[in-house]
Length: 204
Image 1 (cartoon, rainbow, N blue to C red):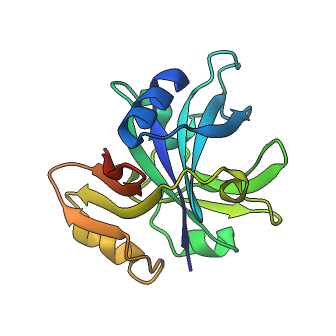
Image 2: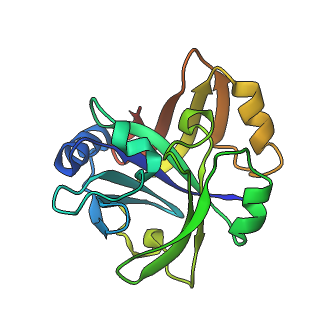
Image 3: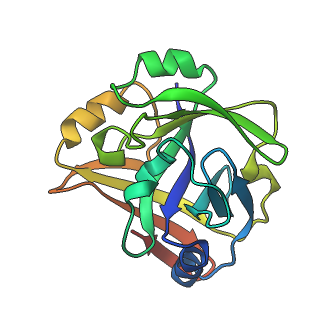
């Protein structure tokens, strides 16, 4: 089984993404760091057992010889919610149950955190990124447990896609989280609703 792990907001620059999320949710982001293998960097927001990351290409890191995750090499436009990530214990077993194109496990680390993540060969996850990236954390450390509690919680993640029925079928027996809702739409789009100290807020 999969469990909801975190959300990813992709941005052209980290500063732009942080500014957009902080303005939308009314709270400050914290933590984060560099991902040398992917030449990206991030800032984080704790959401209880989940977290949100703002991620962008790290301009100070050498360009990798392989596509970056979350289809970031083709990203353009304003900062926006692009992906979600689901955790598992046995990533190989979960990949065998997943649609083609979820990727192959890559061993990664950031500071004391170590994990395996399935990364597609072309950087793009199935259903145009509507299917979750798969992650398997190693050890007991998890970013959500180290982040300050800003009083923000995810209440709903709506994923729209023209292949909504197929996406829902691909997840039906894999993850049981009432916050994740798959809906029909003309193109892939994500909309997350949060409870915050300032009331309900939305990220798209």
